[in-house]
Image (cartoon, rainbow, N blue to C red; front, side, top):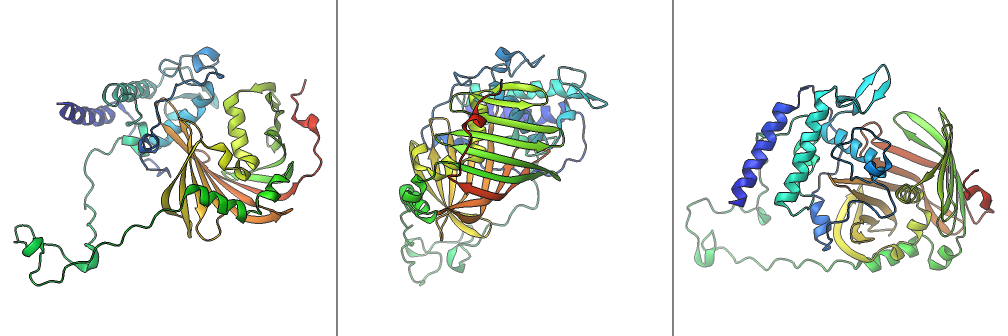
Length: 415
């Protein structure tokens, strides 16, 4: 009975989307990770997380955004990523639901019917997961929309042709009698036992190989600071920056943009941002994301960050073969790490932001490893994110130094 109800719900969901979503414009293709992220958590036995970190205010508590009706319990730092997730799932931009009058945004306005349609879809997703999947994120916006305005509800033809069975056999036609012992061809030689799957390389061994590949633990332990300069290119725009880092997790970032200079810092206790709008304090989630973005200590000391590690198999990163390690930082925070099979270097790191309406991935690809004072570090980082405006940004370092003197005052919040 439950299966029948669920099937009916899926059909109703598709019909409702087709009727309620008004615009029927052609949508662009969007690049996204099409894997089902639910098994990512369930395979590690991860429980449903609390929606709000204890140290962070929700959207409703912060009170800065008006007319928020269904996402009030969302952590404030997740609001923009979730909005980008909606846009990418639909193959649209912000102005599909929100009012923009000659460059002025009125996000609180309900003038566009698409915004109320979005609320109905959000409510449907929340109710479906609550009532049918015990609160797990089995159904998300991307589950049905896949970058289209209207969900695909009709089977696309022609169907893919299944691959032939191993050994070039054609299989036994339906209704044909099987030979002795179930063989399809009388007199055929019995097949040998399948080749046993090799035991996967333990995750700890892969991380040990990575430590050796970048210079060894002794050289890593000598790293006390890093200074670097470079630029980030996204959407045809380029931003130059300077970065200073010191242990255990201090950082200072100065970025020069077309709108002026933006500075961000963290002295180990307080994170801050200074721009033409003044100085504001960063919350814990923003600090963690900035640390993950520049990620010196995180990439140098991998093993210490995780409570559970498991080799998941092999995959391709570009033209390189890579071992995939599923790494759990906490019960609700997991990553995938991709290590080059040949060199042992870290090629890719994928993080997952779990929200009340979906799991949002972010991918970091590391290229052009060079020796910097005895430690190999990547000089190019490609960041792929759920952002319809800037889905890919490339960070290129022009100069990098380890253990150069740093000014501790740079990490302090300005007056």
